[in-house]
Length: 124
Image (cartoon, rainbow, N blue to C red; front, top):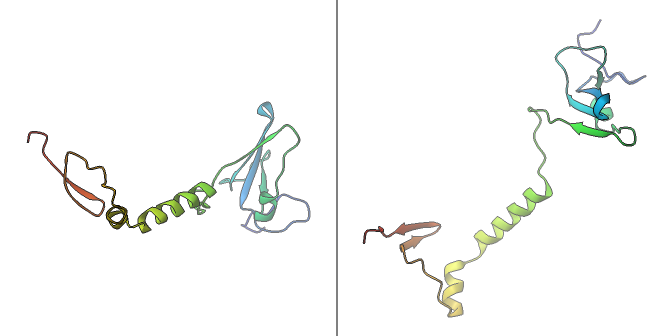
């Protein structure tokens, strides 16, 4: 017998990477990392079958992330990164001088260098 656990799907001999468990009371299918040992009421699935998993109508699929797998960036993450790059690339000091408009100065700020500020002591 091979020490590698195989996919539970019929005629699939690929190695298992995830374990599927059903919670009938909540109408939920839980797909998580490969369990440490095989249990009779759980199903081990290969990568292909775990990605294509669907649940019956009215059921919810909960996919638990594997801690060792790298997380994929979401659309929000990419948008936040793009906004940060645009903000950093914008010449703030020169734009204020060229536009003739005075920047609203912080009354507590004494000097500024990049993103750092030197603040005046509240006692003075």
